[in-house]
Image (cartoon, rainbow, N blue to C red):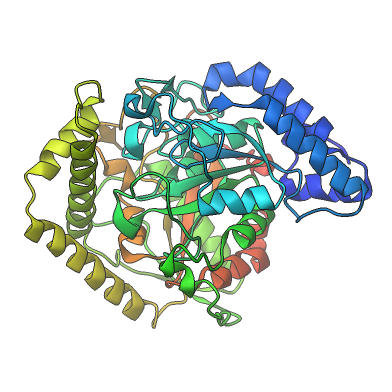
Length: 466
């Protein structure tokens, strides 16, 4: 096994463990050295317990030597987003409201990882209450993009994406409530999966202020690692009735899947370099035999923004009301809560009804298409301390102008994968999304693993500058 240990994928690590060429203890030591060298500059990981990680690595090494590994994730170092509960590690949700809080129990996905023998490197940085598209907060500061150190990795799984891109573990576990896995993966040149609702069970943990829009998923440096992690996280979770859908069988796609491709959304601005990369990737899929058809955006962005914005604002207003004193919280959370406090019960129910309608419309759409293709981001990475880019392609853009391509999948409950299709010289990566019908997560991943164009993608090969 060649190469720097911290740069290897989970799949490569496990192959080395299996033959005895690599050891979990040596891998963890290499990643700790890498952490010491780079984390202060990018601020990706904000809490660690190296003693616990070293114990886990030693136990994993013993299992591999005895031929008794727990799973294909045994001994694989992972990071965990700071809005997820992992016993013994802080969970701050990016807010002073939870400073010093250490949960006593794992959330179900984290429990599955622990049972699989994964090594927990630490917690990764987030914006406060994971409600913004960059990664900064008043407790831990700002996270930077390893590919463009003066720019953001996106958010809210920005710390996790930055960690994986910098070699601080091959896999990051995060959440996606409006694009929070897919956009950081795109900005950092990585793969990410936002699963369907119910594929990965959730219970306990922090309040799910985004209703069922938010799901848990992985970020990784390889497609194989993404599939491997999803296979271990998904499944029936008795504490979450939504997870009853996870064991349902899925038919595969035809030999030449029908792909609806939309490169923009009405007249909303998109960076030209993203459009160039999007068209090139769509052409590559068509060249390999996929039936790629240009379509208009299959949703009304204003309606989706209203639905998502209402649920988010009411959710944070409800949560902050339970917390009480909000004088020390960030301006964004307070402003959202003030907006949420003006909403009525009727407004909230109307938003949920709108989400249900979006799900019906999406189901009908996938009678005509097997997959949808669109960019994951509308803007390239912007200065790291700025919450959002005020302009895209020279035109004004609002706080979620960069995020126009992602929230619909959360509202509609659809699985979506972010694929690293290009890397710029100055502003991080560009990602494309492939989207499937609800519950077709495995079919989506299966297509990706058999597509020559997708198989050719990897962060290590992102040398093209556009």
